[in-house]
Image 1 (cartoon, rainbow, N blue to C red):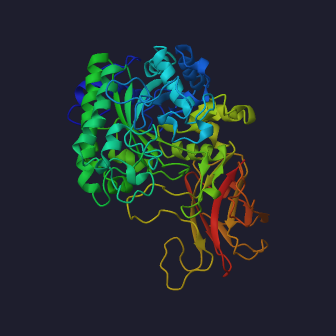
Image 2 (cartoon, rainbow, N blue to C red):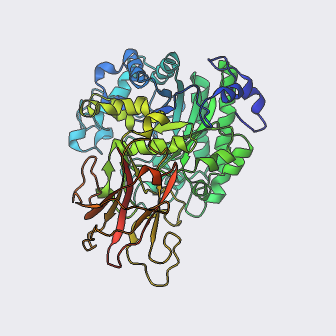
Image 3 (cartoon, rainbow, N blue to C red):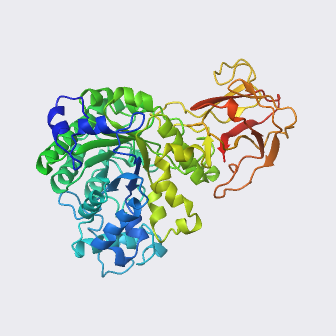
Length: 564
């Protein structure tokens, strides 16, 4: 798979299917797929879902194996990546402090390591990132359960790849300096943080990789994971927390981030020699190539040295990205497996705020369809692990969602005519000071003298990602307007799809006025325009919608193609 100078050994070690990595690529299926067989779903088991979502009785070897079975029973899961750390290790580490190092299982609810929590989160049994989380991690060690090793072994037994995922700069709850999330290095050395002089929130308190101690600290855990476990790959999660240098020092620190990648490559090759099968190296990165470079990820060097076998293209949080340019990544890393992270959550624009968040499984279906159609080798699901917990109880309320997460999200043909929503979205992660990618909101009346290539003169142009064109499902165009927009008549809308006039009768809907699950519109939409789009006007991939709106106040703040 690699193109770098150390490719020979890595690509010549047979995997458990009897194929080398080069042969795996040659035998893979799909348009450009690097995923074995017909399975194209990866699920990330995050830092807490198992420990807080399952009861104490499940903190056993059998409980760990059952977790993997729950993911693999759907038949479409190609791999699992298991998060092993926040700022502290989520297992009995030999190189890092464990999350529960300060915890006294017999101590009171107000013991020092729990005092930062809300009182209701300090009691044992509540499924939250509080005492239950810490206690269950402690309990696994007391019972002699090395859960990462069991998860990896069970993944292999179920025919899925098992990877360990390492967060490279987790700063949850940074303003609460006494939170048990934080290790001694971070607490005792504020000078190692990227912008602690502002102390505004989480991002400012992330590690600055310019410091040798920070690099060495993270490389120590990389070494432990690769020297201790029988893993199929190590995934470095750079998206947690995405910024790794002082503001303005991103290009300077790029060399340090590359050093970490080179160290990880040496560690995975050492593991491959020890284990007798390939051990891949992956990274979770922002979806936009240019933004990666602006943030200090030296992708040209990583590509030249063959440092990546597995790439996850991701938003930061609560944002479904429908237009990831997989082909650009493929051109830079032609031998790597490229996965895209879809989401069931979406905020229409950076300006909209969390109150406009919509949660709808049809977003995940739509983004998965786009990713696979655009040539991704699969989809990588983040935070969906919580849906599999008995505490969440999600599948009882929405039974078809289990099939989507474990089977259909990786099947392009199953998604073609499935209910899905294809929305104008944006790349969420940017370099410091860079302009937003958001296409919305856009004023209905063009400002005088503006040169905006999204609208020439008064016509608004939108690129709506469709993925595969449906064969039979109905498709509706939905345009949402801001509350300061006067009522717009639907009788004579001037709309085109790929230069074809849309002539079907349009209807008007009232926005929900509140945030709700699977809402048809964001909260701030006051009036919604809906018109059917004939299948003949559509094509695979991106579709251009043009609207010549009336010259009135207000703005377009939402646009989607709804299928099914």
